[in-house]
Image (tube, rainbow, N blue to C red; front, top):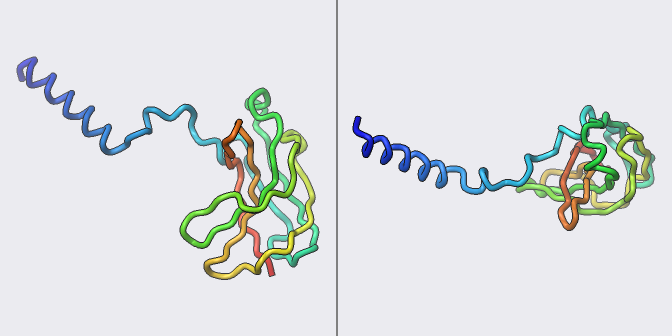
Length: 138
């Protein structure tokens, strides 16, 4: 294969990769979900509004300088993606490894109305989900 053909093949491959995965090479940092916080659990997983919910996790201290506090949200999904929806608590020390909260009064869980306990790191204006655990609200 001549140099021109090799150069053309490389150019085509790079261009094709740009179309297949645009933005991947431009991402500033990899997603932190299930890396910074691991083994996240809630108890109980089926609650009524007003019940106490216990949340526990393991924090990777390699991120201690970057992730100095986290927030507690209730995440919501209609089955077409999810997002932090209901803000519950700020300034949680991720090294604490646990917290308790009162289940808020929200519409009961059902198909198309899905709730999550969402532990989030606020990176400037961005909310980075660190852990997402399904919870059933009765």
